[in-house]
Length: 109
Image (cartoon, rainbow, N blue to C red):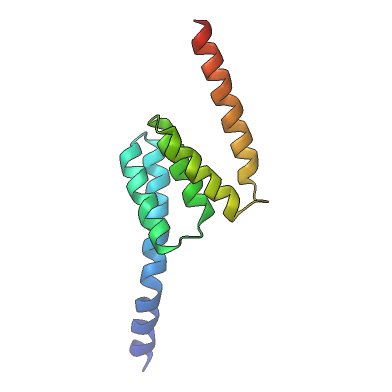
């Protein structure tokens, strides 16, 4: 009987563990600047949980790094829609401020 319970528990936990694994892989890929891999991992996380605001947020960062600003804005908008009061908003403000500074700096040089 304990083996059956263990097997059933693993069966139901496996998708959750896989989802967490894809999200973690996406963050690691983003840190390593492997933006295509990060996007693929966050796509998988979003397919499993379409209300995962953090996955949209991080995928937005990957799109922005690839200069695909239309997709980055769409994902950031969805992240804010899903979690309007989350700490994510502070990161959005920092990101937008640093992007503006970068653009201004580049235009001056």
